[in-house]
Structures are given as structure tokens and as C-alpha cells.
Amino acid sequence: MAYTKRFDGRKFDEPREMEAKVGVIKNADGSAMFRFGDTIAVAAVYGPKLFHPQHMQNPQKGVLRCNYDMLSFSVNERKKPGTSRRSQEISKVTEWALSSVVNLDSYKNTVVDVHIMILQANASTRCAGINAAALALAHAGISMKELVSSVSIGKIDDKLVVDVIKEEEDYEDGEGATDIAMAFMSKSGDIALLQLDGKIRPAELKEAIKLGEKTSKDIYELQKKALKKIGEES
Amino acid sequence: MIKTETEETESKRELIVPGEAIIKGKDYLPGDGARREGEEIIATRFGLSDISGRLVKVIPLSGIYMPRIGNVVIGRVIDMTFNGWIIDIKAPYLAFLPLAECPKYVRGDLSEYHDIGDMICCKVLSFRGKGVDLTIMGRGLGKLEDGMIIYINSNKVPRVIGRDGSMINLIKEETKCEIVVGQNGLIWISGKTIEEELKAKEAILFVVEKSFVGGLTEKVKEYFGGKK
Image (cartoon, rainbow over all chains, first blue to last red; front, side, top):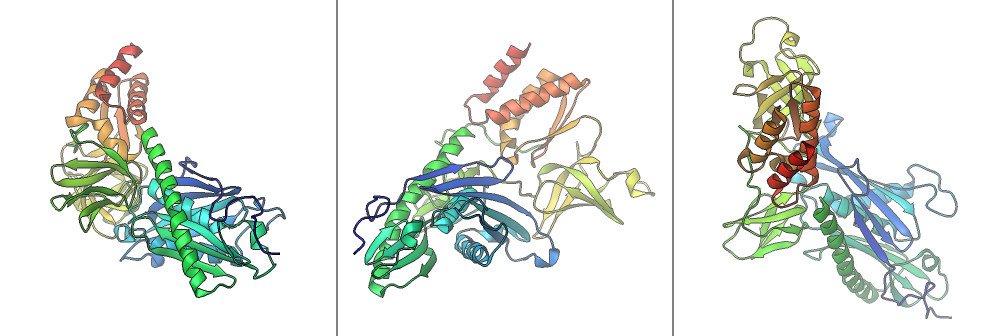
């Protein structure tokens, strides 16, 4: 049986309902929430601040540190709190994706900390995390080249789908499931993150990236709207 | 003594996010928080775009204080070395106030002059990649005795000061308090009574809260009118 209808009844190129909110954590220098359906990510930015230990400081440019974590109640089966192989990897790729847009040159010898917490997970958590973190960085007044918008594209059996959910990730019939997380820069359209889990043909991958680019534009509009909303209030 | 920014300029201000084009044209020059990319001037910070003449810049709405040479700031002494004091100015760098930059210092213990925990009003003398150097040579600079310190977001400081100091002078007049506003967002208030100081504090917080309302000086006048 081929994959003809999505589990939640969405169109193949339709993302889940998205929501972005800036300024959710009062004590942080910048914060934001991003939601894809029932995947909720909250990001908080602290800094630029004094970097200790001193030997880790970089006199040429600032340091960006990302910390991604899923809270223990974010999934159905309780997740053991703390870092794991998975969360370390995601922290690292998020850091790389974000450091390509942050102007760290203006923050020599300092550190910018980004904490991403997943409150509720239903796949695409790293994408929601990057979207929230980009907003939080902008909210913290950090100098950035542009924003980043991230979305996951899946290949379920032989169909390309936008914004994968958990059930689709676990799909095993036909060609199985492939999950591609990608992030695009808002102005230049460059790719900040591209990860692939599964198998896909080169031609299909190109198509998937095109689909991701299209969806990321919608996400960018949403991010812009969320930032402008908080700007009007302050 | 304190640098002021014009409160309301003729140019239209718009909210802008990083990576968004502010204006197109070869004539414009990118200022703070902006960069040029081909024909366009692009924002690199989240804030309000400001075009004055040819200069295009972004006025940030948030973010922590970054020191600049010539800024008058208020800081707390957090440590002493053999030749000066280390001062926390609420910036991502530690600030150093050398002994040589202190007038009328007499031989003896450093702590007799400035002790740990003292609040000092000082000027940023130099700022390199690593650390800030301060001075207290100058009028109005030095140790702040008595009074109270409040902390606001440093991006709101130009609002609290107002055009040519109009706002802060109004608050000073109305509350009969001495007020020093540091560019880093620390504000020192000293009055004859606690009530006066609290009144000044409330007024400053009112300005911070209403910082994006047009004709703010008038609003503050009304605010004081209502209080009497």
C-alpha cells in the first residue's frame, strides 16, 4: 500500500500549524518560542557575557554555545533528563547553523549562550529549535547577517512531505521513511543546515531542498511578524 | 556631560529584523547595525531603522550594553589590585580603573579611596578587545555616596535623557533629586528624602515603560501633574 494520505490529513506540501512568540522568558536577554503543531521549542539567549574559563576565550571573535535538550515530559515515554548522544549532536549542528549568521566578530573574548528546550516533541524538534533560537538571538540584540528558518522534509515511501511527524518518521512500508532537516538563511537563501536520515535519490534530494526553500519563506514571514509584534510593544 | 540622542526625528522609523533591506540606493551609507550588500542597505540588528541624511542606522531595542569610548557609566567596585580597581559596568567585559586616573589620591590603603561595593561614576577611556579602561578625571565623575541605584535596559537611556537632556531635567526639577544616568543603564538617584527618590524612580520607570510613545516629555509632565 502506497502512502497516499498523510496521517494527520494534511496536504503533502502543507506544514503543521505554526506559531512564533518572542519574549517568553523575562530574565533572559532574548527569548522565543516556536511551535510546529504539537512540537514546541523554547529558546533563551544569554549574553554576550564574560567568558570563563579565560583560556577558552577567543580574542579574534566571540564564541557561540548552544545547548539543546528535550525535557523529560516532552515525549510519551519519560526521557531520562540530561544530555545524551542525540542532544549533543543536535546542540552541535544548531551551533554550526546559527554561527553562520551571527556576526561574532563584534563580540571578541565573550560568549553568547543559547539554550533550547523542547517542551513537547513530535518530530522536527531541531527545526523548531533553530527557528526559536534565531528569533531569540535577534531579540537579544545580537548582530546577525540574517535570520534562519528551518523545516524538515521527509520522503515517506515515494512521496515528498513537508514537516514530518513522528508517525511518518516510523513509516516502514515501501521505500520507508527519510527525514531531511534543513535550514535556510532568509536573505541569501544559503543552506545553514542539511541533515539526512534514511535514503534518497540525488534528483529527489534536489526536489526536497526546493520544497524546503519554499516552506522556509513562510516560516521567515512568521518569524518577522513575531519580532515586529514584540518591537511594537516595547 | 551625557550624550543625548534626538528624541523624535523627521525621518520615518520602521521596525526592522536582521537581514531585512532598509533602503535601496548607492548614496546611502551604512551606520551602526547596518551593512551594504550591492545596492541595498541591510539591517544586522533587530530594532528601528533610522535614516538621517545619507546615514542609515538601526536603533536597537534590546541587547546588553557594549562599552564605547567617552561613555559615562556607573559601576560597582568588585575587586582591588595593587594599582587600581576592577569595576563591574554591566558589560560583557570587566573594567579597570587605574590608580593613575584618580585625582587627589593620597598614599595609603586603596580601600580608603574606593572600597569593594562602592558605586562609581566613571568615563570609558579606552576599549580594546579585552577589557575596558576607565577614568574618573572630569566633572561629575567619582564615587557616588548615599542615594539609590536603579537599573534599566541600556537601550532606553536616550529616552530617559531626552532631547538635550529635556526629560531628565524635567524629572530632576519635579522631584528635586540629583540624578546621574550612566550609558550602561545604571541610574543613581539622590534626594533629601526617600520619598523624593522613590518618586524619581517611579518617573524613570514610567519613561522606560512608555518609551515608544510620541511626545513623551508632555506625557511625563501630565504624569507629574496627576501625582500632585
